[in-house]
Image 1 (spheres, rainbow, N blue to C red):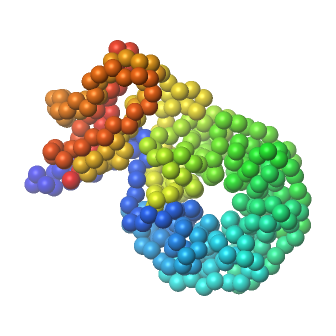
Image 2 (image 1 turned 90 degrees about the horizontal axis):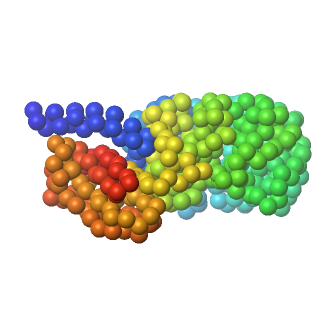
Image 3 (image 1 turned 180 degrees about the horizontal axis):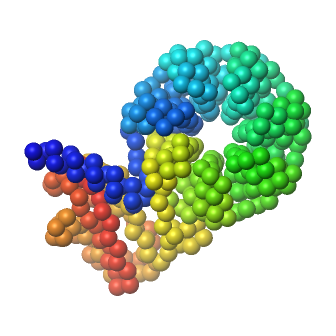
Length: 403
């Protein structure tokens, strides 16, 4: 009975506590490859691809991921599915592969190029586009059986992303601050230079008029790409996704994950305690989203990712105690904190009954960021608290030890 009660308690705790802190938790993928693209066709079924040419599939909202070999040895940069059966991947070597049985088997189609292919987009069940390096623009009108090359207005430009707002109107962007637009279904493209000192990585429209491009800076249009203006020069990244006109997310290098709730005007950092690359963000509804990155990493939220205004990219608070990582953890975890000035600092561990268990730090520290290792080998599974205290600051957070 105690065992079942503990399992129930863990599930209840995970559903309330883990999601109420950073709002994101780590999924188990059983791979260490860099995961560069993620796509869900419904709340349960999703796909992710990466550096070894393998696609991983989940049918239970990310709890389990099954690997399928697609283009062995070739990195996958883009994954896209039209329905539960039909999907496409694109990547190194100019290859676009298609599956008609839900990702189990894949057939590569000739594209006429050997360049890196970075982004796929379909406007309907037959018509799709793919862009890549050296001005590569490809179009299919028969669901990927054939791909036809279209003339690029900038043959030397590396295109990183493509997005269509209708069957006729589409955009692509890439290096040197350039954006191209078509209004005739990709037959002709017009070039627009925003700022040649910036590189752009992903374009995303929330409707026919309003779109965003993320790269070295964040830019926005409200008139279908006729004009683009820098919305925020302090936020940068490689992927952007909006769940509604107000709420958007940006990911990037060094574990960057930002959220906006006012149409991209302000962005607040979401702490994942992750310092490697986060390549793509994708949401299945306004609350449920996924972020994939290096080392087989996939984070998930079911609350839209809660934010703390003290972690705003515009302001570094004087003191900050971060959520431990990993959490939940099995024996070992890291506790990160920041203190602005030199002073006596204590970091202590407490049990759920409030009894002090361990003292990790109890001395004067200089200002800076600290990462402290905590080992709970000698402790039973359960909820614990860790408290950071100085003369001017005190904060307590929860963590969960599961053995």
